[in-house]
Image 1 (cartoon, one colour):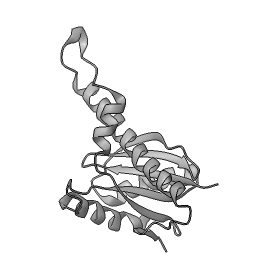
Image 2 (cartoon, rainbow, N blue to C red; image 1 turned 180 degrees about the horizontal axis):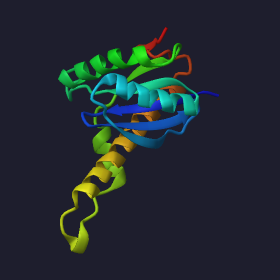
Image 3 (cartoon, helix red, strand yellow; image 1 turned 90 degrees about the horizontal axis):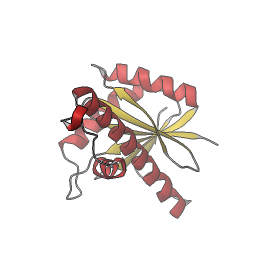
Image 4 (cartoon, helix red, strand yellow; image 1 turned 60 degrees about the vertical axis):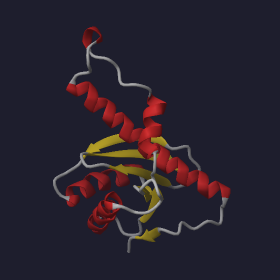
Length: 163
């Protein structure tokens, strides 16, 4: 049995989910983005080693119309910089992540109010956003696992192996 990590890449945080190859995907953690992709890779490498991960499923943010926009280009650029710092033989799969953050917010429900019913504090907002990122990563990973169950012979078209 192999382990997979799902990744929801954001500007400030990286949501991480984990699953065995037979699922289900579960939120794992949220990483704060490093200043350089090599710092992100070091954090990922630690998780990859601890959990014996063989594949990363990275969310690719398509535009609503179905084409790649500027965020997808940033994700591809980040992945190109990070993959050189990851273990040999690690499979990298890109997965359409449209609406995953919205779905994650629906699953989690609204952000809790602050003290005495006032607006949430900065720490409450940050904690909620981190939960949303983890949940979105879980949705991305579960979508990929579900697609593979429908077509077991499916070889992800946008996968590549780090060699």
